[in-house]
Image (cartoon, rainbow, N blue to C red; front, side):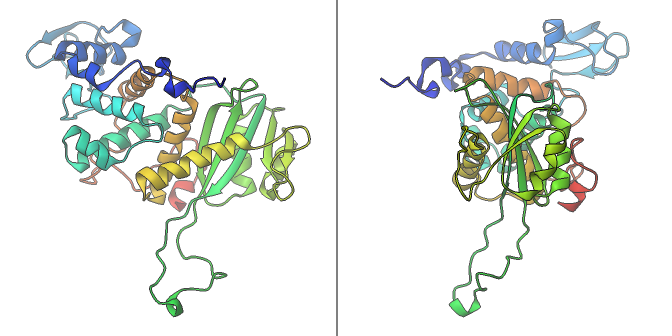
Amino acid sequence: MHEQHFLLSAKARSLSIPQVAEWDEETVFKAFRDMRWAKTGGEPCCPQCGSVAHYFSKRRRQWRCKDCGHTYSVTSGTWLHSTNLPLKTILFAITLLADGAKGISACQLMRYLGVQYKTAFTLYHKLRSALLATRHDQPAMKGEVQADGAYLNPYSRPANKAEDRPEKDIKSSMQKVCILVIRQIGEEGDGANRTLTYKIPTENAKDIRHHVEDNVQRGANVVTDEHPAYGNLAINFKHTRVNHKICYCGPNGENTNQAESFFARFRRMLKGQIHKVSPDYLNYYANEVAYREDTRRWDNGRIAFDMMRRMLTLDGESPFRGYWSRTNVSPAVATDDEPAGLAAAA
């Protein structure tokens, strides 16, 4: 008898939309406080000076610091700063996003919440950017690590008439984008337990070596395919290659199945949910899939509150604040882990 899949088990269900709908405003407000100020047990701290001394306005649900006079709310100074959405609506949205194993589209989120498309799109991208900004809160990878790259190109609709279509050997003029995935393999049978993704111009030795050396302990066993761009990894790592032209699994069981599994889920997300992605933001989508892969054995309540905590504990402003007015966001938002010039080249 086969063991029941985790997503079909009761352990995967700890939070539901009907359950959230029954929560009153005070319960939702307390949940946000506990996530925002987890280190102080939900006790508010001024985002300006850090003081816990304050006055509280029950009607406006805001605090005024006794030391510096700054007025702040539960979302002030976070990546949800100045949002006009009710807290319960935000919690609804995050619960829906936590339930989507391959994500959902902004149009779906718009209809579920009864908000404008711009509102749903911006909220979702604030979450994606928060997941990307907090992904390095773990030690370097060790043991067996699989690395692979895949090209994801925008779809180019062919011309109606055959004589207007380019020959097959002519390269597409569409921008070519490569996603590099690095996955740490857990105990036998558990699959991968940590995933990192990077957008690189091509599957080249320089970028691959930079990202692998930056995230993997020296001496780890890095498993890749036969692509020559991975050849330099043998300098600092035990490098195992699987020649896919001959076989997908080597004589000792070596393979890149976990990296291929990531790309399979990513492609299903792009084709079935998102449909169209700008190359400028592809890294956000790739990292979202990486997060979903790493939390695939978490219950949905844990995922939802972890997503919310990441948005509420990041200082400063989300790069997607003011996105539609173009007051704050750059088309290609650079991250600290990208080599210089990569974002500009995207």
